[in-house]
Length: 502
Image (tube, rainbow, N blue to C red; front, side, top):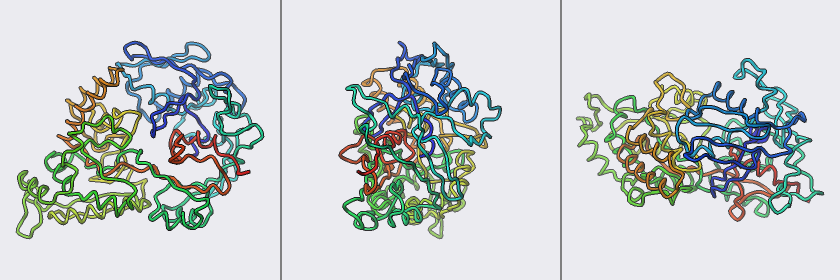
């Protein structure tokens, strides 16, 4: 939540509805041919040190981001038009740039342009535009985010002239946010159950009994299946994971219904062979979605392995193409109790078809480092999510996203690229017509199911529970203006809407 409370984007995309809310930019325009995008900044926005937001801030933000973390490979230049307008040009037609570029958190030029080593800068006193920019009471297990006294959003109005913060003039904003550090889901859940936190954005088994029933008048939860697809990621630079027949056989060996019912406590549903989350139902090819590739079928998985040459040995252990017994490791971060349960179910499923597997659960820092450098074997992890399916398929199948082993990668951890899918992705990005994009997207889905570069497990739930005993204005199923995630772009909408219970 810290980043979303301190810094803000040009626009906010609600993944639940696809609605785009202007934020630091109040309007924008895409060029004909989708080769350039101009943002027009909202007047009256100031940084927490009182200086105005200007176009140069956007230029420096993208320069620093690309220098430190990479990304935006399609971005050619970022140019100041005047104090409140900035144009970003692309190296190729890129119609999906609006949501990607607009979601970037913006930082001040007058601070970051003076820092020689931005990756090493501790940023002790952030200068930002967000509602909570002051860090106080920093301790080993907690710190406080205090309000930005000059926050522009306190005076923001919607198109009808009404306050857009969810407050009337006589209603105070949040007095502050105490950020607590927890070792994992278990300790975070204990704090929530005990009433020590107002906002609990994590997995909680049997949440109705463990949390809600202890104060049903005030406690609520909402887990929409709108997060990125959770998948079993295989390192395709290594055998046998470089064999699509092997990957597809493993997919049919996995009992996703049990994974969702037991490992995920019934909070989600099995993935289908499109790999897409529930947010993209209208984009899915019905034939691909209905294919049996993600349906548990031990007999079909066994037959597929046999046909591909992965036969059973004398001891009923399945052999690789080199004649050696197949063994594999599934990595999951130690704090993710839900995904650890998922991995253990996969291990049992694999044992049923003669493959020995174990779960390795070091700290997430170690797992993430292995994913990013390509030094892992297999892992249960997240995927990329954007406003359209383009983001998922580009990150999963584009040859332009494949990094060599040992090179830092922000996506495509599995190191898979497909020329046919890459060509289709280029066609998708070159058109602004959604009907045309959907048709191309369905061709990409067919290629995805044919190659199955990763093994989709289930749409990730957006975790969120809260108590309204002290604060009201929370999003929920009936008022889905945002999710309850503390790491989403919509988090700032929640921080603007919450107010002390009067």
